[in-house]
Image (cartoon, rainbow, N blue to C red; front, side, top):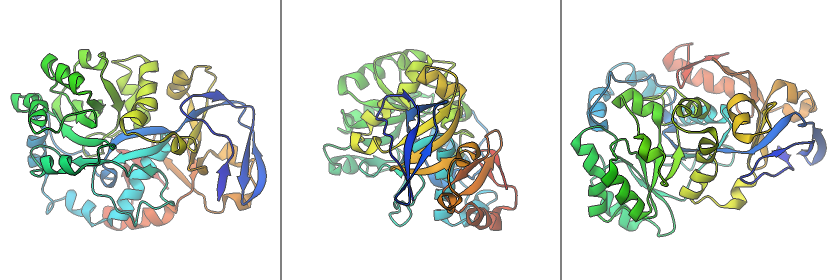
Length: 372
């Protein structure tokens, strides 16, 4: 086990050198050419679907139309992907996030405590409630009623461009399921009236621009993005978006300034998901960059170190040279298309074999070819 001594809450800092504990003995990583940043937070993902290809031929009027078009579990390619054991698919989803500097993910599906253990590569938010959507969760009102009063409630809403999608935020409100705990995912259909309602109820938005553009042909209106609404940026899964969080940040840069986007993957999702400071303090990333501005470093630099729960889970080959071989015994190389090769604390070879058994040798993780 590796434990990193340096701690970064939600603010960046330059590193001069930080102490690392390796199996209870001290080693030193020289991070003087790196910016230390808080671990990034992906506020919405479906982890088990990140080996899948992108499905559908949009644009669609709403997400329900998309789902009914693509959901054919007895047919290829869904059939083969569902044969990959779910724990394997969940681990690949975690690795997609880890490669982009994400240390915490909000997984919008049933949780598997046997998978999301302390050995899982990223934190998975546990203390929240959720429903899928108005169309696919007939018990949504009951789910919200049973939800803890101090935990967030996450639901797909306004994922479309038609009148039905536009009315969904008002339907949520009529059910009593729109308040300061509610975070709606997508919100593409929000208009001025819907935005005003969201602000009155102090609800939040989780924005997935690539997913929106792929399935619906447009994303959240600019006036919503530029409003005072609390907004987090997220990826969704490979079913609709072949991106990781770094890709999504670059896509979102077309709409908003880098400083606002930096907040959308750090402080804003932490607030929306009510993540405790004590948890965030044990997670950080080191980015190799010449920029002195954290937001710019995140956009233009390379993630070379990811620490989750105080434990190194990803390290670049260059930084790994500073550690004794025994400290890297659990690490295996991982490279995906358009990303630098790294070492990760995961059994990549086993995960590759388990997926390739059903999908063939050319695996793609969020659309990027896995290079073994």
